[in-house]
Length: 182
Image (cartoon, rainbow, N blue to C red; front, side, top):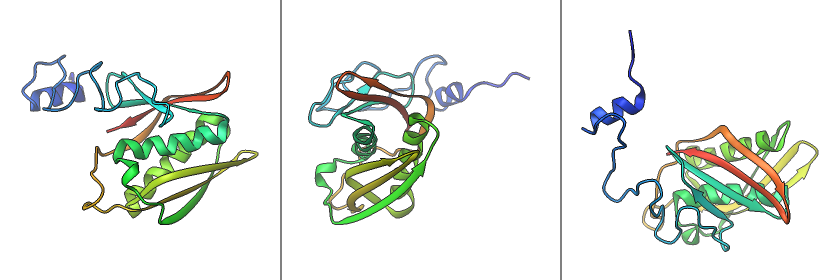
């Protein structure tokens, strides 16, 4: 028995022909502006990340002067996708430590733990700082609990995907790419 894929099922539910992507009002097509203030592919110097085109979900590129800075930028980018971080006060601090065999595994574990801060505790991150010791990375974040009267949620991030995650050294620092499931 041949089963249709999830995309085909979503297309049927949305009354869209198979092979076409359903487009909700206000949701940009691939290549359109992903956020009003940040075009897809445009590097935001102040935020240190850019959105990249991807067939599904959101692909993010982050940069740091070193691995610790890269890891912190990844956590901040994750929360920037959920809420305007400028509205988040640095009222409380949290920390967590992960251990991994390589930079990609450590980044994945850090992003997963950071997402759990929000999913389980409703905690939003304003700033992040990482320290590395051998294969351990300690992440210290500041922020506050989500308050719907002050924090306008941009989108829900369901998960961070390990598939396609890359971390590499480049002149002037490090760059990573990862995909989040929205």
